[in-house]
Image (tube, rainbow, N blue to C red; front, side, top):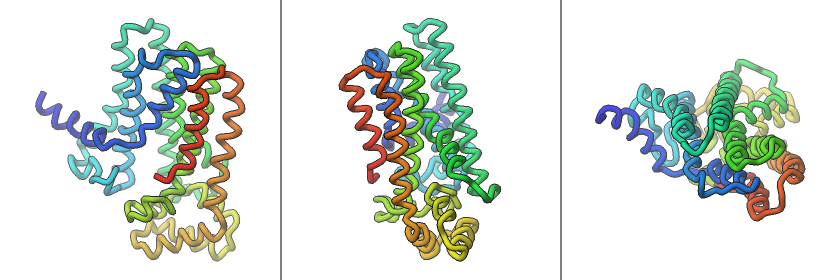
Length: 309
């Protein structure tokens, strides 16, 4: 028992206790209430998307050789890569334990939730695989459509999982579940775009914490793709050189950010995130009855793409 505590439970709580934005659990509760469900009855399910999300962070930090997570050393630095890898995969299985032990659900509901978790986790790993392959320079030409699909898999899946789970437990209609799922996926994509923006010019930049990490990792963000499409051959060549070199020094990273800003790519990304949210809301708006949860859900989506942290 003590060994399992030290090798699995303690590392997990080390990360969970650091907090985080935790917007996926909020999205779950809002979706559940928006279809007329009782949030208090299923409040314990808020742990499900959050535990899975943090599991992906543990793996992501190992894959990216990151140093810090939420202002403290990454789990693999504190406990070792072997412990971190084992922990990340273990955290993907917690949802099935939560679902299987819920005596209030019938077999049909459990099967539906289990299938939902299974396929969203597969999509999440597909998205991470795309991101890894691309920032390793294994695919030279990446379209905006391909980038948005990668985000839909990597970041959109757990948002979609949260919303659809809320609709299922709230006994929403199939149309409501589908519309909320697509809206949540769009929120995830827009959230990723805003994260990419903040990595270059946000609050973390001014604090000197992880600034330009996407440049160091060579990530092909929507801003990079827009710049490569609009830039002169000279600027395009230089930006690719920097991204493929995975620089650590601030001067080179700032040079890349300067090229991106030169072509108004950050403004373009902000506008794209807003456009995606507004287009997706039109669909979900017609499937949900008027309610306080519906109003908050709409405002919540806009908050996520306008935040500065």
